Image 1 (cartoon, one colour):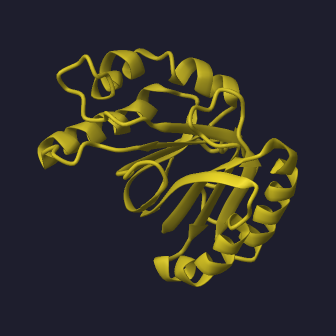
Image 2 (cartoon, helix red, strand yellow):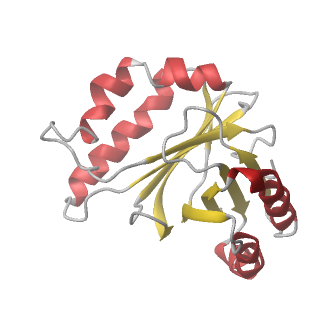
Amino acid sequence: MYSVTRLIDVAEPDRDRMVAALRGAASGAGALGWVVEPTLRGSRNGGDIIAHLRFASKGQWDRAAACFGEALDDPAIGRVNGAAYSGLPVHRAQKPGTVYRALLLSVQPDTDQATVARFEAELQLMPQYVRTITDWQLSRVEQATGASAWTHVFEQLFTDQDGLMGPYLMHPIHWAVVDRWFDPECPDVVVRDRVCHSFCRSDAAVLRLGG
């Protein structure tokens, strides 16, 4: 599968209009599943709107990219961060969650591949411990957009917003194991640039084929 995520900064008076325009563009893109929603309170560098589309192949996105890009070519839009990437999600629960979260991050380019592999392995441990994650996917970025040369996207569906803000962010696996890769005072740090932590309401089960 091939996925595209965009985190979009929009002037407040135009947000409802842009949500409607982006939903129209997403519905006509031929995606297997998509979500376009305002971000929820607590997002960090996450934009005002999340647009996430999942395709069967990169070729399908290539055919839809120009049309979708036209919706983003609007003077009300100030900045867009995002990524395009391949991968398959992992499903941990029968019922998908209702909050979609995307973390865009950039690993330092001089990081050796063995260290990158350890970093990725520890991120992938988190869903085993955080029971409020119903679906997840960790992907290497193939095409980055925006403020940083994003290298990874870590996506989850959570049972609800409390399941993200409490059991996930406050779990020991987060602050005692994973956070050291992001902490500039720790010798293991590999992520020095800012990250984009963004989440929204999602009834579309976007990490499951066809929504």
